[in-house]
Length: 439
Image (cartoon, rainbow, N blue to C red; front, side):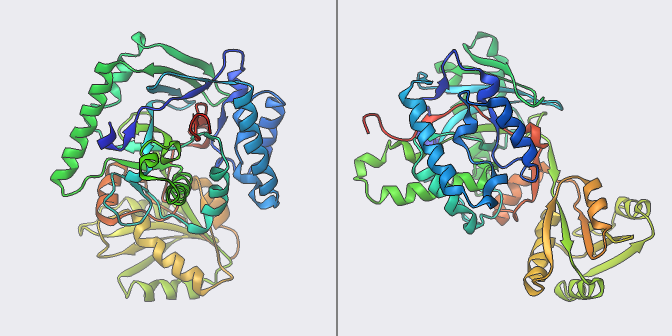
């Protein structure tokens, strides 16, 4: 699988006496505004072996104790390795069967070659970012990765496989695969099961299916295979650490160095359990007249604004089918009034790609205006109705346009979409050593 930018990892799993309900914890970038969620997790886990002790929940980033937390994380990783809390598995993949309160999905746990990945906005690499990488978000993640002995992933990467040739045949064969774990997740987040995949026939089928996906992209003049669905900045940090480390390694040591790879879960974009939701926008502390004047000026009179007394009027206007193609229509709420922004002659990309550059420009020119990212339309209505606020209802995100958009236009703006709700995100479960044996 090397030519595909993949390889079979030696995965580490918790030993048999570890309580997996306490071991597995949701991705660190969830519930960032709800520290009480993480407090409940801490109370539930206690001193039991857990991935909680090896991650830095982002809700704590503003506390100013990141260095202390990172040092403790590195210490716990060493402790778990020395106490053999983690058991090495034979080289191979893991079929991940994730059931959530809303839907179920399947994935394949594999290691990706960071030499085949780039987080640059425009690139021709096999593996690419889906959102713009904010460089000032990397240093803390780099520090965490640099001293880590374990690769503990919450990364979800996507393949463009509408014919279901890669993951689905493996899922159909799960009854004959060795089961590695099977348990309920904490906080009513569903169920997780994993199966070892080291059968030569299945592995050959996976590789063959992936090669067909690349061949299909090559017909369109590209070689795109994988895009990052969740964990863009974590993978970018791993790449940055590897680029720095390899400068001091002899050529022969670079080929199989553990830090060259990153453990990820691959999911089919067309998996029926994978739902995409738009992430809405909120502006705080605006002056309406100034805002709408800047909007018209930025789009050079290609922009039209209609106001409505209620949400029903806005929604009716958004349902009207435009005769002309290439228009973006975005609903908004500004205090007590609703409206629709129409941007004509827009490029064939997601609406957020057209809107976000203006929002960035406007907030840069008006430092008193703050922008926030909002999940759920009801939250937009609640927050956008407050004095001085303006909320944007971004249209549904068409996931079928994701690969073509990345291929032709590069990475999307930050927080363009979300894969499911918070409790549907990946849980930390498996790990991989980041240092060579004997180091």
